[in-house]
Length: 159
Image (cartoon, rainbow, N blue to C red; front, side):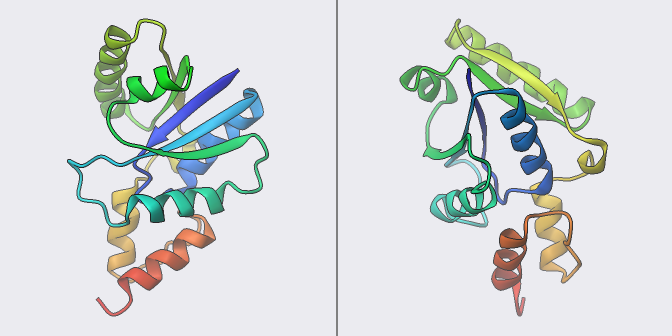
């Protein structure tokens, strides 16, 4: 079975990577889809985010990375994906994600959403927190893959 794990990944964190690895251990294929959400103000271009995710997941054999824009349900239909994985860190994530999953199910009846709880080591972690720490020159070791750490240091050097 192939599953999709989607997000903006701006940037990918160790929490994202943990969910990807856990999915790869349970499913035949994991399609990680970097969405270009035009309503968000991203720190990295969609192409840069794609490259960061691709590099971070390169050693996981059954992971494929792709770029998309528009609605997740349209991407799922076009690519014959029936299961979407969403990570949950806290109750507040669940409240938001249940609304999105319900709408996706309404728009595409055959699409199921499976929720994975964040590992306790990463339940506090978000891309926005990582970017803030990086901007302020803080230590982001263990929060993001090494390639992302280098990209963030380069981006915020001198700010």
